[in-house]
Image (cartoon, rainbow, N blue to C red; front, side):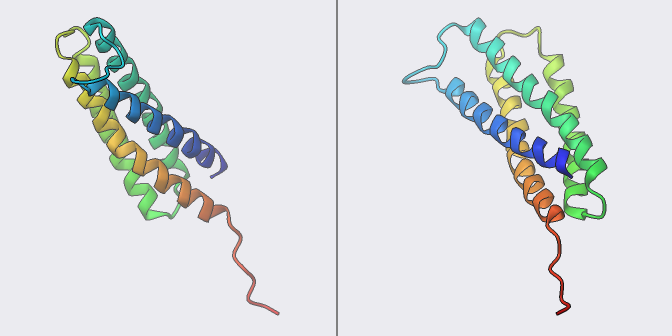
Amino acid sequence: MKAFKIMSIAGLALFWWLLIILILLLDDEGVRLVDDEGVRFATALGLGALAVLYAVPYSIVGLVKSGKNATLKVMSIIGVSWFGLLLLMLLSSINDVNDIDEMLGLGLFVLLYAVPYSIVGLVQSIQATKKPLSTHI
């Protein structure tokens, strides 16, 4: 569970920063993070792919390390299928530069599940490493 705990901490930080950047990229009015549409598309594709490429192995490790923890096992199974599907969707829309909002939306869908999943993974891995208190005096 130690590897999963480290991946949870790193994933939580990564997913939060990616979520903030993707929300700033979605901003159509006011201050924009990037003005050029091609750069916006490439940034959205890169961030979405980064989130998915971290989330898929993270889910697989969660599935392997979950043991008897049903919550983590179910979330890992959902994560593997969800992130795998979104990875295929990201790869299928690589050539369509005009669909920036779709790319940003796919990245947000990844992060809307990845952030709570990494929080649950972190909490569960911390609880699994705690030693039970002895009831003997």
